[in-house]
Structures are given as structure tokens and as C-alpha cells.
Image (tube, rainbow, N blue to C red; front, side, top):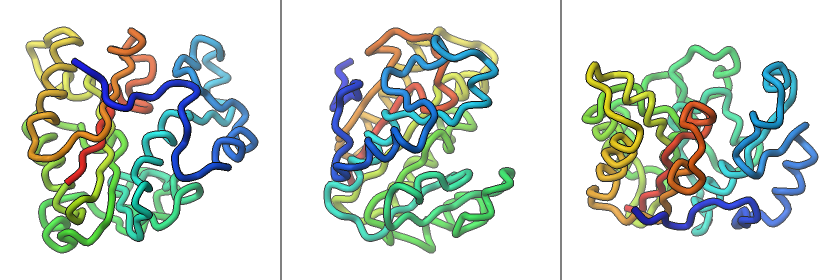
Length: 220
């Protein structure tokens, strides 16, 4: 399975030429090689302010066409508003700082109906994978309804979160292939596909729940 525009440590954060320097100054540890917990103690992972260049690299692809409205589904603490413009955030709750979200509700078909093709681009970072594969596919399809034609949507998915929904668990490769096939078979252009497990061979549990084991950008 071929990667498309994958991340690498020297990759350029697109459209924001000063952002990498700003991030290096902001974080105690700005991770570029995707293996931070090989270098940080377990306590350090909690005590230090850690950022990951890779996720900024992926988000920057959404800004190639200067979007005026970007939807962030499952925004959590709304981190990305600090660094990227024009973001509208949806967060169902559960995080104290989620109060900064613009919409406090679950993402649903009704939300897609009410905001049909309202946004230029969107992202859902490890927020749509809490179910079986058909449920994830449905939410991805509804997400694509939010954006205008030629718009882009970034999805990060942790394969092990989906895998845990099943009793008969296949191996990691099976889930990577199954989820990848789901995205590639959708009626949208794949602008970016990255999977550190395929690229680096790192263990799934290391960073899957942070940045996703699979990263896709679809263009409508």
C-alpha cells in the first residue's frame, strides 16, 4: 500500500512559514520524529508541554486554498484555534476546557443536514473512531457532507480503538488494510495517506491514541 504525501521530520509545514519556529518556542519538547516516549520518562510525558510536528503538517494541507471556514469535529480543548485561522469547533463535552468550543453537541446526520456544504475544509482528529467499522464509515461520509466541492477533510484514526469493538480480533495489519480500503473506496480523491506503522514500523499503542495510526485527507 503506497503512502501519499507522508510526513517526515524535515517536512515543510505548508502555508505558515513561521509556524515551526513559533511551535519550537511554545513547547517544552517539539517532537519531529514520532518516537517521543522512547526519550521521555513516563512522568515527563505528563509534566512537559509536548507538541507533535506531524499533526501541524497534516492540518497545514487544509490551507492550500485559503479556506474561510474550517470545521473541527471533536475539538477537545480547541488547541488548533491558537495556531490556525477560521476554525469552528464542535465538542460534545467531557473536557473542562471544551467550553471554548463553538458547538456543544454530538456530531450527527442532523448536524450535517443543518450545515450542508457550509465549510471549506474540516478535520476530525481521533474523534470519529469510537465504534465498529460501519459506524466510522458513516461518520466519515457525514463529515464530507459538511464541506464544499473541492474542499478537504483531514481524518486521523486509531485502528486499535476500532479493533477493540470486536470479539474476534485480527492482527494489526488486517485493521490497517481494512480501514485504508474504506477510505480509498470512497468517492473522493485521497490527497494524503500516512501510516507510521507502514512507514516506520513503530508499535501501535505508542502514539495511536494521540495522533492516530492512520491519517487521511480526502478532497471532495
